[in-house]
Image (cartoon, rainbow, N blue to C red; front, side):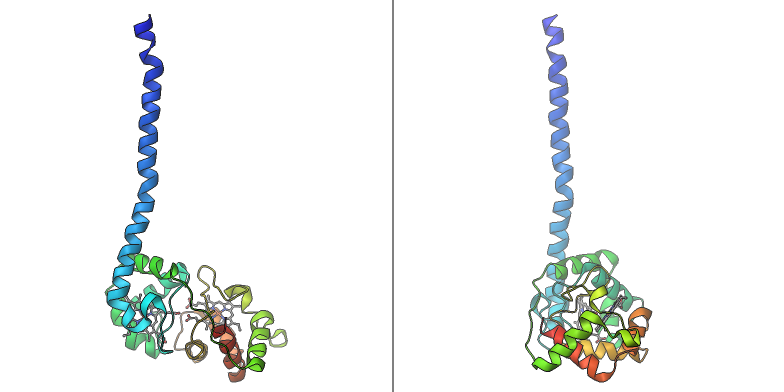
Length: 215
Ligand code: HEC
Ligand code: HEC
């Protein structure tokens, strides 16, 4: 009886131990995959992107947007947009179409993962009156003209959210240029932002871009 009985409680405990071991291995896999993905993204970013976008995406030149702490959803959408020729303003064509044509979906995912985990660049101060005007527009919009508050999509601090990009800490010249290319219809794959850009005059675009760069 004993010899028969003993293995029975042991069997489930061995099974339990085995199940725990399997669970640990499987739980570890996504972490491992994440680490590999991030490493691959880091390597490619250093080899292919840093020359223009800077180390860690902290670009120094306003021609090249900063990529650090950008949302992964937005980065992925933009790289696919360049690859599919959906984002077609002049600088996108000249600089990003050829590079993006070399990137498959897995590579795009690893680059988006890498840049989204880099520290953001924090603010360059500017003229106080200009910043106050930009902040007011960002937080409240221009209700008389139906311009919504930028914060309602881009986040209270301009930190971004999903497919709504981070704008905080971006070069002001780049931000102003994007408002211009939405408005003139050459960055034509974002109809909502195009309508909003149309509703801003040049002084407002300048003010809101300066405020965002200062964050
Ligand atoms: C030769 C310079 C150059 C290289 C190399 C380059 N880029 Fe770009 N990239 C640009 C420029 C210029 C723009 C801005 C285009 C515009 O103003 O329309 C841009 C825009 C982008 C954007 C859009 C950012 C935003 O805020 O909308 C992303 C994302 C991007 N690049 C990712 C990458 C990645 C990832 C790599 C490496 C695989 C890379 N770039 C390599 C020049 C470059
Ligand atoms: C209804 C939501 C919404 C509101 C409100 C909004 N945006 Fe956007 N904005 C977007 C989306 C979505 C994108 C990304 C478009 C794309 O995928 O190409 C974007 C992109 C941008 C970009 C380009 C960023 C880059 O890295 O290239 C700028 C600049 C911008 N918005 C400025 C503003 C400003 C300034 C305001 C307020 C006056 C504003 N947005 C209000 C949804 C919004």
